[in-house]
Length: 268
Image 1 (tube, helix red, strand yellow):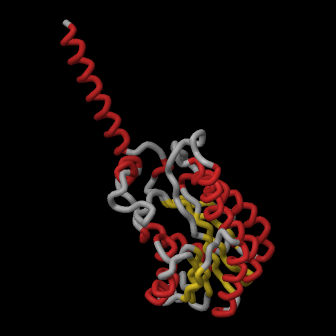
Image 2 (image 1 turned 90 degrees about the horizontal axis):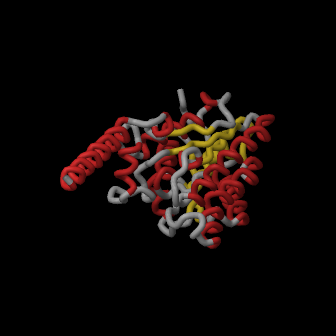
Image 3 (image 1 turned 180 degrees about the vertical axis):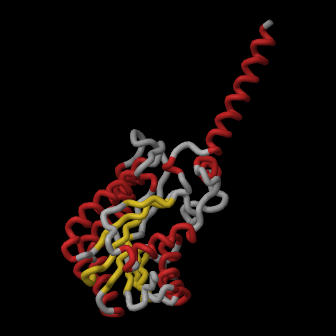
C-alpha cells in the first residue's frame, strides 16, 4: 500500500524544507525523483537524497519549460508534480508595502505554481497527481502577511480550476496547506515560533515529518478519487481556539485586573 515504485516525481523547491523532506519520502517509497531549485549546492543535495537536480528559477516560465523537458529526458514521462517552491515574507502593512515586494513574492509563490500547472500536465501520464503547496495563511489571516496570504489563496483557487480541467485525464490536483512547520522559514529562534505554540491547539511547531505523509498519500494511487481539495496540516489551528490561547488570555486578564485593583486602591 502507498508504494510509489515505478513513479517519476518532479518537485520544485526540493533542496530545502518541506520540498526536500517530500523528495526524501518519495525516494523511500520507491519513486524516481527530480528536484529543482535555485541553490548552487543543489547538485550535492540531490546526491544526498538520491535524486537528480535541475537548477531552476520557477518564476521564469522558460526555465520551467526547460526543467520539465530535461526531467522527462532523465526519467521518462512524469507521474507526480509537486509545485512547492515559495518564500515567506513578513513586513509592513499593505498600506506601507512596496510594489516591488509584492511582485517579488507573487513571482515565486504564484507564477511558479501557475507555470507548473500550465506546462506540467503535458509531461504527466494520465492518472497522475499534481500537489501544490499552499498555506493556512490562505485560510486565516494576520496583519503584515498580506502579500504571502494572497499568493497562497490564489494557489488554492488555481488548484480547484486545474482539478476540473484535468479531471478528464484522471489527473488529480490538490493543495496542501501547512501551518507552522520548522524549516528555514521558521527557525528555532524565530520570534513567531512562540506565537505558533500558543495559537496551535497541539501546543507546538510542526516538523516536516508531520506534513510529508500527506504529500505521500496524495501522490499514491490510493488517493485516486481525491481532487480539487485543499487540506490543512496545522495541529488544529483552524479548528478553533485552543487551550494555549485561552490560558494566555486568562493570564492577561488576571494581570490586568490586578493592576486595575492596585490603581484603584492607590487612589483611595
